[in-house]
Image 1 (cartoon, rainbow, N blue to C red):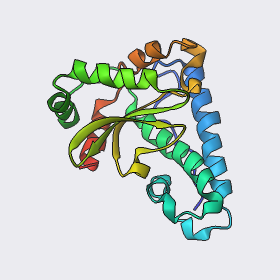
Image 2: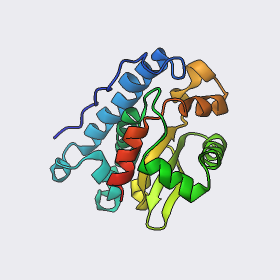
Image 3: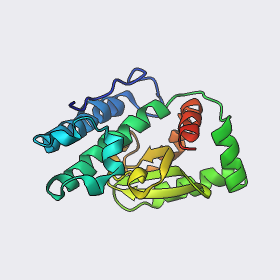
Image 4: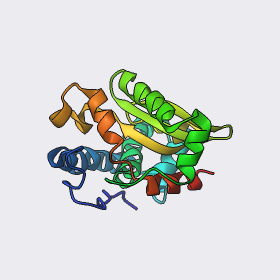
Length: 200
């Protein structure tokens, strides 16, 4: 089974003016496609992983041969991260539901969560992701470098933001905090609730 680029559940311009259409198109058709292609290339000749999803691969990296582990970590992570990210984006979804309630309980208020999450994303050095994850003790904010996924750490992602420059540079240049603020306008809370419940 070769990995395939998932279709977006909306048009490239659907998140305007927060995420611009050209960035979305390049991000999806170039960057995500490259992760898929390079993951498939790394897995050639390793048929034992033919039925594994990208999420399963990054959850069990120690089972991947050392000769391809770095490639699977980078490109399998890129595929898993973006496949998680795209459905989590939608305009005009009111924050509500079990994930939102859990956030308020964990962080004291939604604004308190937003401030901590935004700071973590803004201060992450270089390329990577900021995540809200579900663990045994509740919810936590973590960051990962490059295309690493929380699943590798045994943590289940509920919400995440891509802070690689390719995700925002055409519109926001070096103004990462503005991009992060825009991200909060396009969170699909219905999907976040699904992720939260699936992580329970």
